[in-house]
Amino acid sequence: MNKIITLIVLMLLLAACKSPEARRPVSSTSGSFIDASVARNIKLKEKEQAYIKKIMDANPDENYIASENGFWYYYNTKQPDSLITPDFGDIVNFNYNIKTLNGQVIYSKEEMKTQNYVMDKQELFSGLREGLKLMRPGETVTFMFPSQKAYGYYGDENRIKTNAPLICEVSVNSIIENQLKEQ
Image (tube, rainbow, N blue to C red; front, side, top):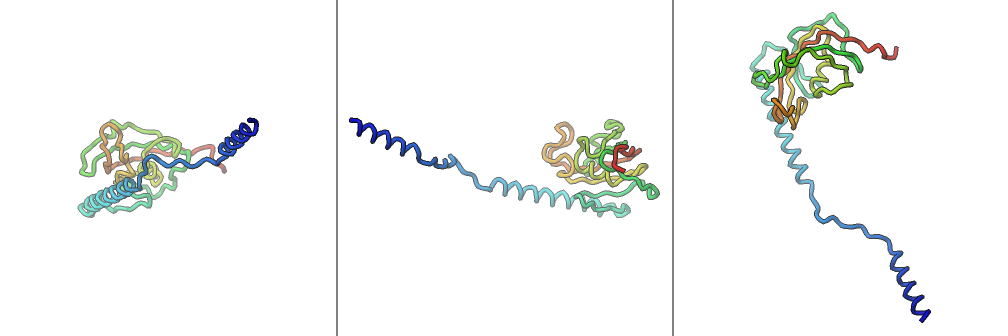
């Protein structure tokens, strides 16, 4: 009887020492959703760029500049004498408005009020953040942002709709340099 019990215990121990097997997923998905999303975004980008190009072609008097960050802009007022552009931590005092590509005002300068923005330390949509880095005090620049550089898929959950390309006219009033910069 002892031998039988010992044999059963040994068999249970051997069965318990078996290495665990990986569980298979209940359902597997392919990359088709991601592929479809990428294709949609490429089409959206091409459509927005074509519309922006059409606007630029319709306004040949403006000297449009293509930014390396994926948006276009031109100077309304340029300050070639100033050498100051904002760096990390500098405080930029500016005004701006937001319009649709067809020129309809979404937010006026009065509604947006004068802003004080600590460079790269506060939230601001990516296109405007990169655009401010190009500006000097006293300049006014008109930017054309594709939707991915503006408010993207979500919009502002108020007046700016989903995937809306925007035009912003931005005026930098002053730049206060960060006093804590390494010298």
